[in-house]
Image (cartoon, rainbow, N blue to C red; front, side):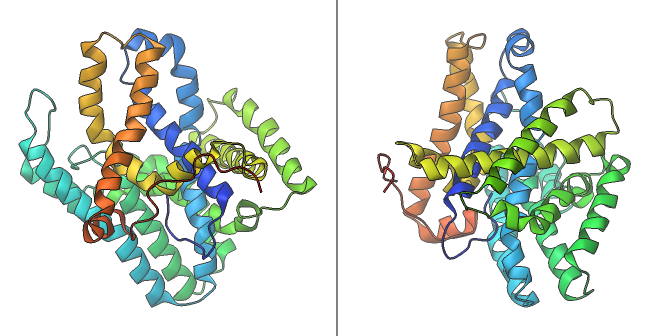
Length: 349
């Protein structure tokens, strides 16, 4: 997800975000298929995806925050986080609240108005929230703001902030069920944001070097055995798989960016607009599910593939509509409209 953007976009990070948002839609769609079909065909891949896909977004966001931290401009950083993350969180929450109020109850069981208001302002990661995915924006805002305050006001080094984030992660089971100010989600994910800052030189490295291949190889070798250690203390398992899985995805994306195969701009486009897909795919799932079950496709890979494809394309279509209304686009997505249609067949120069 996009938190801060360098003047020149890094293609491999757009590709990594594109792959990550496909995995997000995949992991949300597979659980809504027929349960017997899910357990037989999709449960293992779901576990792999959940081991790192959200961590990947936080690590990329953190890596892009490093440059802003080093400017030592607290006011600029806080205002950027408010405009680019908190305002979209609030506007999207209000929009989804209105949508929930007019949605027929036979299509979706929605919280009451009072519950949704509590979900927006007090319990951002609970079932009371108007949308189950918007917690990400609120937690990302907390990560960005807390790091900026710690670095600029408390004068903590990145290393000391990382130690604090690891301690918070280790203690996260104590607050897992606390939804007030998304405390549980924050405790589980803050460490990945700070790790992204700490290893930003690795994340943003676009060189064609043996170092990058060695990092990729080590990440893959160390990532796989950790599924055998599923009974290990959970926070440690999550840190290891989250970091190694993310580094693997980023380094593979770097190789893909250098090869620049035909059609890769489709994945880049998904990455550039990953926030659009992230925040809008769940509302479309209500209608996609009706379609899949109506044609009895909930026990087939055709139905699952259709669900994932529509889960990516329909939010993008809505995003294109929003681009025609720049103010709405800025309020809901935190940025100005970007290029609508990518050069899908652009090849390596």
